[in-house]
Length: 238
View 1 (cartoon, helix red, strand yellow):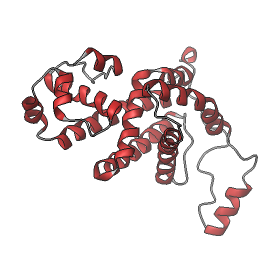
View 2 (cartoon, rainbow, N blue to C red):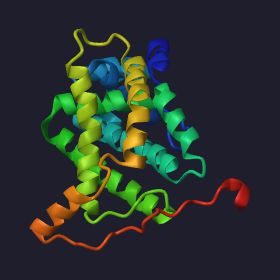
View 3 (spheres, rainbow, N blue to C red):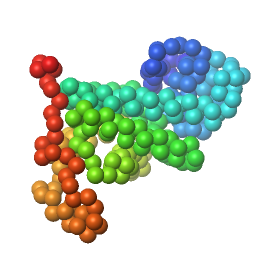
View 4 (cartoon, rainbow, N blue to C red):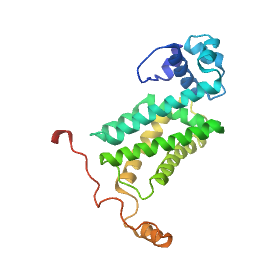
């Protein structure tokens, strides 16, 4: 991979392998995030320092390469979010994610996928919803996330909020950001406190809107979580 590509994104594979297949995948994630999915296989092959024929040998087509990139990015996002949700010290994990340009480039890959649309984008978002649901279930089990009356709906809504926030902010920029990773880091940093405040302390001061909705729709009236959410043990108490 070229020096430029490595400077754009340090994509860490699960086992830190440097095989030709992994180099191509990592170079493709970098290029797709930086330049969009219109980039050609020859450019990706040059970034990975392999022949175009080797790219075809491993992935058969550009669509096959993108599917593997999608899967790898989803796995990275899942691991990062799972760590933040169940960590004994979630604050440090959240701040690290907000400031880490590696995860910022994963977000730009998400952005490119949304802009491209099509079947792959739809499947990518559907997989991301599934990942979100799993992350939330893990957080509920760990005591860091409140249970929900509608776990599937919550996963859909939170995924839409995250992706919509990213896409809308980018669309409203007067000029496309020249450094997407830095732009995503800035966006994440600006939204971290507000997001944590809303998710931790809530927005409404009482439950009348929820109670009214449940009464009108016949939804479950029982509270799915205790008055106070269970608190994970502090590391010093273990």
